[in-house]
Image (cartoon, rainbow, N blue to C red):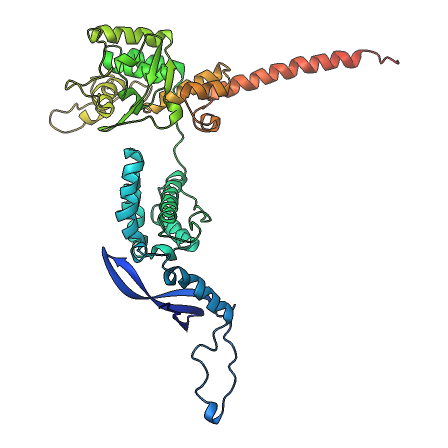
Amino acid sequence: MAQEGSYVKRNGWWLLRYRESVVENGELKRMLRSRKLALLSDYPPKRQRKTKGADQGKAKKFDDVPDAVKVLARQYLDPANNQERKPEQVRRLGEFVESVYLPWAEEQLRPSTVKEYKGIWKRHLKARCSDRWLRDVRTYHVNLWLNDIAKQNRNLTTGSLQRVKNFLSGVFTQAKNQGFHDDINPVVGAELPKGAKGKPTHAYGLQEIFSIMDTIEGDPLALTIVAVAAFAGLSRTEIRGLRWEEYNGQELQVVRGIWESHVGDPKTEARRDTVPVILPLREKLEQWHKHCNKPREGWMFASESNTPVHLGNLINRNILPALDACMICGKLPGDHGKGEGQEKHEYRRDNDVPKWRGFHAFRRGLATNLSALEVPTELIRLILRHSKVQTTQEHYIKPSKDEVKKAMAKFELHWTTKSKEYAELAKQPATVN
C-alpha cells in the first residue's frame, strides 16, 4: 500500500515524515525518516474554514498544507511507492562509498588513483559526511564540507581541494548510474574554496641535465634512467615498464606502466605509443645494454631479484647521495651534527650541482627545451603523448627567465628595425597619383 506520509511545521520548514526500508550497517531496516520540503515563508499554511456544532472535527488533518507542498511530497515518495527504488539502494553516504564505490573503483580505475581516493575519503570526508543519507545530499552540503576542509587544513592547495571535489563528483556520478541517487549530481554546482598557493613546478634546462648526468656518471643504472627521462620524456611508471624486446635501436615502445607492484596500461591511450630515441640517449642505452651482457629480452632496468627497479630507492641510494654530497666530506646533510659518528663541521652543498626536482622535471624540461627551439606545441604534444594540447601548454612548457629576456630582446630588435623603416618612409615626399 502506498504511503502518503505526514506533515510537520518545524523551524520555518514544511517537513515530510515517512517510513522507508533502508540498509544500515549492512542490515535491512524499516526506519521513520523526515525530509525538508519547502520554507513556510514561501508556502504559508492554508486558512482553514471555521466549523460549528456538528461540523466541528470534520476538518481533515492536513487541510492547512498547501497543494504545492503535497505535490513535492508525492514526487519524493513516488519512486518508493512505485517500487522504482529498492530498499537496498537507500544508504548513508559512508556505507555507499565503502561498500559500493571503492570496490567499483578498485575494479575500474588505476591502483594509484584508488589509493589517492582512499586517502581523500579517510582524511577529509569520512568524519564529515558518512552519516548523511546519500539521496538527501544537496549542493549546499557539499559546499559546507569543502569549506570546512579548507578551513581546517590551511596548507591544502587549490589543486588538492579540487581533487577532493572530483572524488565526490565521481561518487555521485556512480550513485546515479547504479540507482542510489535520483537527483542531479550535487557536486556539480558546488563552489571550490580558495586553497593555499601551490609550489611552482620545475623544468630542467639543458645545462641542469648535463650537470646532473656528469655528477652521476659513475652510476650506469642511474645515468641511463635519467637519460631516458630527459631525452625521451617518459614518466616514472613508464620507465619501470620498459623491456629490451620493445627497443629496436631507434624507438622505444611504451606499452605499460608499473606503479608499486601493479603492472598495467599506460596512463592514457595516447601514452601507448613509440618514442624516437635521439643520439645521446641511444649512446647511453647501448652502453647500458653492454653492461647488462646484451640481453634480448627482460626488464630494461631490473633489480637484483629481476623485478623492475624501484625508482624511489634509486633516488635515495644512488642519486641524492651524488647530488647532495657535502663539498667537504662527501656525506649527506643528515650525517652532520653532534651525534656519535657524525661530521662536526657544517654541511656545505655544492650549489653548482642542480637540486633534485623529481623525474617529472625532466619530462617538463623536454617540453620546455623543445619549445625554446621553436618546435610547434602540437609536435611537443605528440612527443610527450598527451591527449590534449592544453595539457602540454598549461603544465609542461615552463619558459625560463632567460627565455623571457631573449623573447623581449627579439621583440625589441624587431621594433627598432621597423621604427627605422617607418622613419625612412616618413622622410620621403608624398606622391600624388
